[in-house]
Image (tube, rainbow, N blue to C red; front, side, top):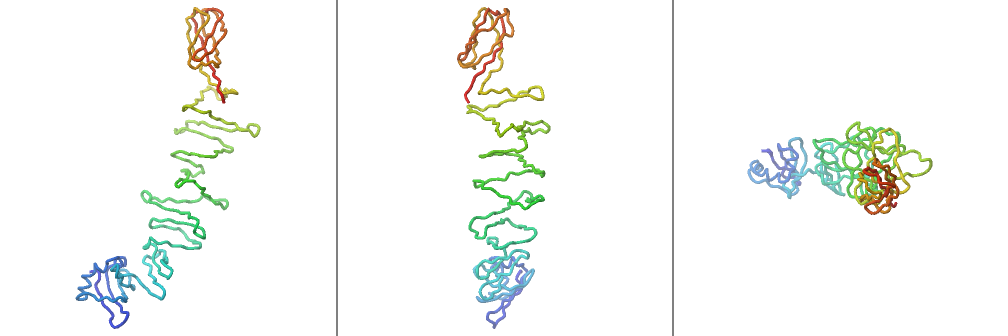
Length: 351
């Protein structure tokens, strides 16, 4: 039985109850411990033990010996030492922080009283700060009334350790965390150690402002290695000029293809006004006339149509070309006979 002796020093007030137990400190201070020991105490005392309200209790237990008081509401023992003005509770876990629970000197152990907060209005200089239970580290200004900066740890898979560390610095520096404008956000992280900010999944979104590259390039690559890239490279425009690539109001999703020019250097064909062009279209004509109507839904009354013969039976020259909505008409000086024409249509657009 865990309590193996119990006796009282009679004739002294307050008197001491002396107990020897084989339980450890955690067990003898657990609520309802005395209820679990009732039969053992009755057997040792040959009946019910008489407790007095002001009894002090000296217990020799597994791992130590100390002075306690009997706590009636919880039916257990509480460590005690009662000088005038308050109660000092001896710490129960070596190496852990002791905190004050009230303004009269009641102290306890931070690890056994995890619902309490330890405050210190000064600086702490030490080695590694290590948590053995979940919790947070919070920092606030001197008044403590303007919010806190909190570092919180959650469980990692397999007990993995996450370390926040600096690289060697050449100067003192302050790293500012800007106002993110929302209740939840994440850092932009990199999985490389060479200074490159690398996002391996997800998207980078800039809701306002500009992305500025100074002395560098905007580079887009596919995921396959050694597959080349698409690059946007700025050069000196000869003055403080901006060169912009800008879209019009769109009515559909669009993809613009840069064709293969089959050489190492080339340039875009540009116009001073927006244009839409239908690629070269080939059409066979039966001949037998000098006026021909070509139906093409791309054509409008404002279109510019260019036409030439690829082949003909009779040599003929193109005369007037009249565009219309959905078609255009052209005339020749003579009947070309069976022939083939090529044509392109260019449509102007407003800015």
